[in-house]
Image 1 (cartoon, helix red, strand yellow):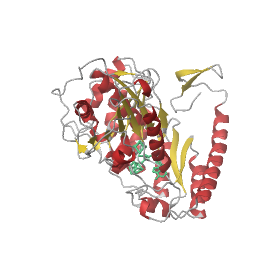
Image 2 (cartoon, protein in one colour):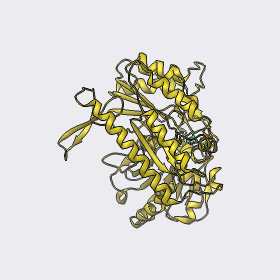
Image 3 (cartoon, rainbow, N blue to C red):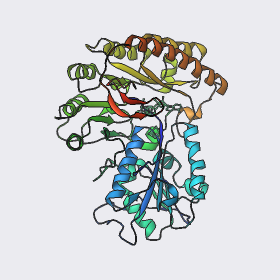
Length: 449
Ligand code: SAH
Ligand code: SF4
Ligand code: F3S
């Protein structure tokens, strides 16, 4: 599947957190080691936490790991922030709107902030981006921690319990991925497994390299061991995650490349489906398609974000490929021995995007015939190269282009879906839709049925 933007509120178990207590002097605590020397909180009653998540699958999965870490330390998850001793809010900064939501939501947590002992913490990409500034804008926050520092969370919470008023975990210079003893997964069938953190590309519009730090791959033996444990625990589907998942470079002596790792995961006895997201077109190789062709456990779906169909725009975006180069990769997927569904991400109204450029994006939809697109209006972001350029496509025009693009895609999908009528597919049932009185699941191509 592609990058899906979600807001996850706790149901019955642990999730992502956010929220804290009042403060005085900001006191960075990034150096505090998180080791077995930092014991689980033992004082008094069992501590409770609430976690709420915005953003992409990587954020969702980080929240699962944070929840697992807290549970392993004796915390108990609760369903609403009012009841929680620790409220954590895992944030997304990809577009202005997402980032804006953070402060209004923190305002709500403040209302439930009846006693000063409640800890309100902000995690994720806005936390990393805003850092100490959170303490001024939202004084109820006492913990700010970016994704590269989650392994330090238990130590940070202990410092708060010990009387510190404000703590931060904002270092990005770690090559340690967030390994947890316990991950509390929300989906009982599909398990996310991070294989690469951060991003070394430098797309001119994007905050991710700043908010999640440089690219760090996880050792292949650790990835494989986690996948084996998941399959033993009954998960049927594994989704390998990374902002540029196919840029994976095994840091261990095994030196597996992405395709080798993918193949090894698919070979684990008992696994039914293996997916991966998100692939960067520049690192997308024909070997990935060959692997999918030869192993039906590898799902027949590739998410390959194009962003724009026009070369001048791609160049300004610093995407490192051209329309023609991208289409070569698409041709390779189209000519695979079995049908592989393709999805993408598109930004409309990027700096300097002309009518003709936009037409090129529309024509790309016709050529590729995507099964699904995720489309966004360009939103200038702080600390990015494009953030300093003129955001010269008017908001209204961006809206018009987005609507035209989505209409075009709707027509394409309608035609593509018509062809599927009457055919049978295996679906992994994920739930029940009471309104439709139907079970809901996904095909291996990630279509919802
Ligand atoms: N790593 C992935 C994308 C991560 S962000 C990749 O390289 O494709 C998910 C999507 O959000 C991006 O693909 C892009 O389409 C969109 N996006 C990122 N920054 C944006 C911005 N400043 N404005 C609008 N959309 C943006
Ligand atoms: Fe952002 Fe580009 Fe990295 Fe994707 S590849 S996360 S769009 S900088
Ligand atoms: Fe993901 Fe949003 Fe951060 S898309 S990487 S949570 S900025």
